[in-house]
Image (cartoon, rainbow, N blue to C red; front, side):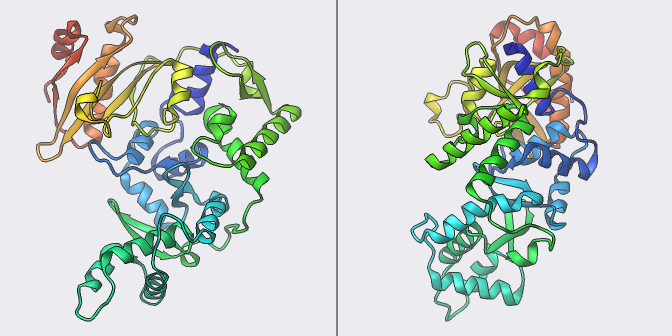
Length: 395
């Protein structure tokens, strides 16, 4: 298997080479979550938030309300994968190891007051689902000894240890309820063994990416036991023939699903996708650099003077090649999408090949962000500026 074949195999597994790969509408959102394993949630709203952006990339008729409906229908839940995420409800039991670890670890970073935790649990149990702001208003009443900050910490701790679940959202405002009232009756709530958890992670990554490595599976997950168990699972799959260990030039050997190894992968349709910085396909930065030679870092947390590309850059995928990134911002009041700085880094591909699909992708992205106007402020290399500015339609 060549490097190019692996690139195309993983893009296909990530469903970035097809139109509507998961179908349409709300069911497509559930299909996407069950295939990808999780969708990362992020609070940044420079453009449409990451969880909506990632799903829209694969579901052209996606609407943010679909995700909220699936949560209220108890088909999707929120918890931690490697970060705050939406996960398919069928995988709930695999969140239990972390929930129980938080519950058993009294010195966890959500260091909430046990008395306030009991108060929060009792209030939600008897009065029904609550938002954090509900406790904020209660705390302002005369005679109450608690304040909003302790109740917020209690909510987060109770959520992280699995006593509370998020039963709905209004934007980024979460509504909490008692877990047993949120979980469907048919959901398995037995804690997986360490080996079952390792097998879940291995299979999740293989389904979503087509290949994996030990480092990718254990990324941001601590513990030598997990590494040992994942290694054992991968070796067992190797012996069973469900995966093959493939040497790839410039990379450590990888475990590839056997049914993908001998396939012929044709060059994808020359379309352009503007990816979220938190898209599943690029979230493991070392993997994307090794596989595609694309060095991507989100610079919004980098001091302005040290930024190389911009505050909130979106990777630009053209077919099976990352050709650059664009720093974007939505000006919502003006309904304007600004391309602050477009960086074209792969200049070996002629602009005529990617210009039309890039324009189409930007138009579609502007519409997704409810923007009717578009501005292109800066282009690198500057020699492309006139061609690009002339090509962009006037909204």
